Length: 580
Image 1: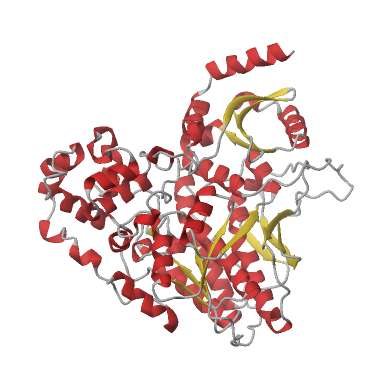
Image 2 (image 1 turned 90 degrees about the horizontal axis):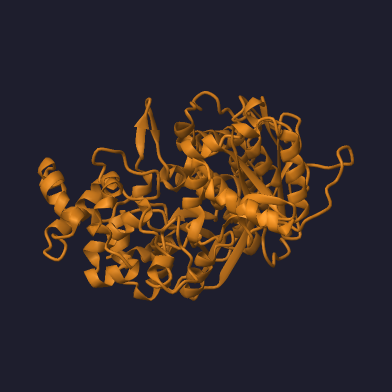
């Protein structure tokens, strides 16, 4: 029997479908944020399409031939769950037409720790979708109501509960390590912070079905809260809607008209700052700017990325690692046809950190979102679509004002880098050589534990292309090549990727990259330097693209100047001198 399974697995590997080949290209060789996947891997009596052993995650692809095999698939899923695995299913068509959305969903699952396997409870015995092994049979796209059921907190664990129609509950858990006892004087503020976390984090589940009605079990929201959430769900899901051919305008309406609470008072929070770490250059620049004024700060991150942990450790700051466990039922909904795509994850992490600030005692949350994050990726059918909307200034203002009025008057939510462009931030990072061997902005291929640059930079994705281009004007060429391990601007095959960054014949990528105008300024700067002029893509820019541009609009210097757009608390404003 073992021999038959081995032969069967080999046959399946040799006869992969187009969808399987495409997904395997994204998963192989640790290309997806360093996670190790195996394909056509034997588990008990079954052969799973793709398996990440470290995360206990199985990814299965279903084609039309699986349409009549629902009962078999459900039995197979139950058995695999009994072995301790989570199962995430996608239709082949999802992979072929929306690979980025599929990868987003896989990353959500990887970021959520795998709870210990439990015996599968039987229907009718109190089982809910938060329990392992229970299968829901609801197609989220056919539901009519998305419900915010309840939220609670005990012993360092926040539980956020959602449901579609009257289906099984979806229970998410957020774990705050070594959580202290909450002072009674902070209880009301904590409850408000937990409430907004419940409402904001619901975006991960709402988008699975996008039903026409939203219900909040605790009652209608005050107008300010409803305004914040309407804007977040509409604009934060704009890319998701664009990619899936949906129009969310007029569809997202949080219940409003609730009684407005009295303005929140100052709690006397300690003058300490939570600095979210993402593994890339921006958050490390923010850390060093705060350290330059001897600010009291803690490096914080959500999830279990080894790259982020290594970067946080390199900062030398105290560290706080919070875990977010998505409801297992979300992955079952994916199997049943859920919509997939990009969510405003920065908004979710911001709400988590608001809870953490009250719980642990911090008076500020300082993200590292630069002003370029406010620029739209494209405009479609009269609506701006911005991949980075929850990193933009509009959301920063909405959430910052809401926290002041509803949680604590002395809790500041801001971005230390807001006045600056990507190029200005990159120039500052170019001086931070101790981080060169640990940072990575690559979303596809950082392994962190590997000793080579290729372990952290795939060289193929928009983030790799933009960071390379943005650093090039500020680093000696040999130094830059030692970071990336390859000559990205001398590879003609990468022309379409760099063209998109320049907004030449295409809109800029759906990624956290700078504006097209600053990418053009960086490329123009390289075109004036002899050491870069012979690189294939720089030479192409000189001969093909530059003649179509106005050189008076390509100067680098204006991008290096700060603006007045920021909402930093007084004690953090001196850190802006770090960019002088």
